[in-house]
Length: 340
Length: 288
Image 1 (cartoon, one colour):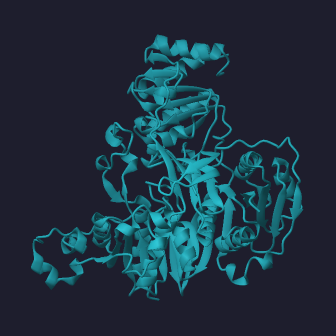
Image 2 (image 1 turned 45 degrees about the vertical axis):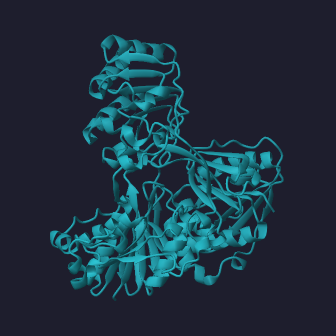
Image 3 (image 1 turned 180 degrees about the vertical axis):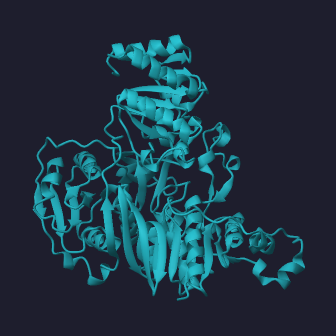
């Protein structure tokens, strides 16, 4: 009762990295609240294969649901598992990845339990809350912090009266780390049919394929990122050239992706990838909060922008006021001349 | 097979084109500076619905939206592109809704519409980016659910959906009735049809009309110019589950983020400045 739960997502028998990141965060929250960290995973043929990918992150109790039809993921069976389990376990917090699966499953579970859900949180903290109308004060609520309104504001959301307090978090936002403390590490294998009715297996997956990511933005030590100021798809060719020279990966702001300059899978920000490179070179990016949320932990930030007052300049270590067309070829030239 | 399709659509502030005047000096959002538009993913949902209507003769497409009276514009935009009808949920009691209270309102309206085969919505709205309302509506109505769809075909009461998943794609079969949300990678929506614009340009919800209605007789002659407008009572809704009252999530605080300027080096685009920076980064082994 009253514990912190993390829903662990899988592809085949591999636990998603975002789930491990959330286990680490969930462990910290549980420690702060003085409760246990529980995890739940559901799939087909996963018994004996997923436990050691989950327990080392400080899990006190792991629920493994292994049965036919639980992989590939479909909405109803996984919803039934979580709803049934949460009715028994009554957790106070439930975290899941803001992935395609988490964003399909989270709302369905929250609607079943009429509990609040906050999407794409960038920070999770514990703190008190006083309801302005009733004057009632609540202790130890989960602060679900996220940029909102296209990233122009940052909102702190709480769920005072409903449990579990549910939140989704994008991959890369939290950092995973093996737990150094002692956790109970109990594993149970509940009977799937007790939770999932046969009618739930209604959506049939005819074809399912997942390719390896074309890039390694999340792990890159240098990221060259372009915004709307790059002007065109051709403008991005220049970024790829710079990235090649620097052994960097190319990212993009949402404005550039929306304008069709760059593929969606390279979008950096709250609704895209979060990166923590040593060097982040922002080219023609104004720096909305929703973008900054995805790159503010970079080591050195270099901003190239014609606008000396671009918001991103406030967090930059180097501000180059000039056009990308002029500056980027010079960066390439002088790097080639001076490296080695 | 004739399909009764409801498209969920939202009028949103255009947060993609936020100018410098989007925030007021006090740090609140200046809604007046942002144009109100048809949520982009919802337009893609409308296109899928219109295609299904063409492929399944006798089908109908209706636009369901919730918002202030001016959101009637969303229904008109749908009619201009080929939708048959629309419903505007508007009531002060709906105001301040989070995703759960919104989905409650939409679900009660869909029940009221009745006998719906397919509900299609955009994956998410650009002002909230939550992607929650679709699945929550599906749960409340007990509908089968498929999210992130890129293409929808229906044959003999079963939809075959190609959908985006993380790092790949999936094809699934789902029996109707179902709720499907459409991803940003689906086909773009068709443009407005001039004839339909002429036909529907004066179509309004009663609350959108001024006290002195111009062309008042027109509305008597052409009933299709009066759009459906529903209150909480009209959809037999429970006010306790609507709007702020029905929202489990509360906004504790909202901040306009002002970044503390940190120490930084200001450079120009001159050769000397760029070479100096590159050398500095190389010397400190930050790059290279």
